Image 1: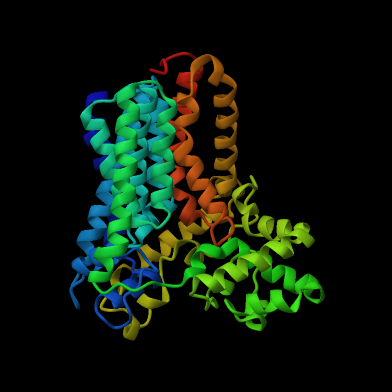
Image 2 (image 1 turned 135 degrees about the horizontal axis):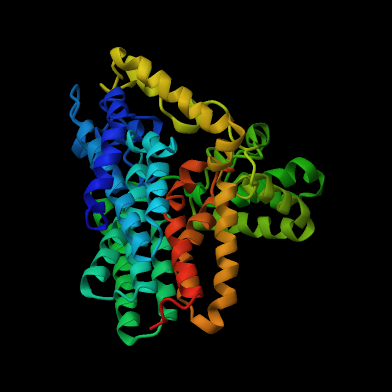
Length: 453
């Protein structure tokens, strides 16, 4: 059976998802991909707000008035199914019982977030399987000692795809790769540095040459300031009288203060950062100086703002989840309910009952007390935290491989916490299918199953 997991698992997942693939034909095209396609078609300015590589990919699959986007949905489903199969194979390599591996595969099949994401054409729909495959290659190198050319090529390829599909991909991949420097072996260090330098160079060249040559312009620089902006506006709300005129002017250079105070949402930076107007380095430096001086006077307010925007990634209960699957899963976006906005992607009426049934199923996952725990990032965060503690405790005796194997997952958590939305499963989702594999790796190293060499 183990020899055929690579074929059986993808086939099983695909067959189980056929009703959803058909019901959501030609695919869910919500606000973000709709906006990307409009950029590609020239209806609006082509910016790097979304990764240009993904915008170009959507444009390549888009033919007005046809179901061409369906081919991308099928590709995404196949990639995800193959990624799950790869995790299952490695779990068996680590000695996990077949029953537990089967339970993992079933979970990945029925956990509503996965099919909801893969029948959609958001950038995360491709980022998810590529992150899983990147992590598999990473753990093979770190904990299984498989450091041949094939494994390094897989790590570089999937790392490159992650870098192209998400802006934070370069940090996730490069930090993960640099962590491999803590392992023994000269060839490991050489390959690690080569991949890291190559990916950094690739990002630099595409940003400086390729994207400008294709007419891509810079988007809002406020995307990188989710946490500082939330802290600044909260401080203005609660201690506005203590903000100096110089600080207020510096803040006003990058954002409309009155509107920001009006739309401030403690759980999401999106409303505030949408008002960002600062573009020059001088404006940003003056703002950061004001941010720092206010931090010194009101650290408690800054801490409160940070916690308010990130607690959902740590709470082990589902307080942060919304009970409306259209908000959580974006399965019936406004862009596909209104013909003048749909770009030809109206969902078929004759499968509406299947879609309604699936949305009810999604609602069950976010309202049922037991299932809701699995739909909340907090439970996975604490499992990851326990693994970190266990790996650190055994590092002196068993080497750094256990800690290293967790770095990619930790990077996902870090960027979620620093991101714009509290407890948002969409950004956290890549960590879920690889956490069992990371757990296997940590315990294998901790029990002395694989030397660090």
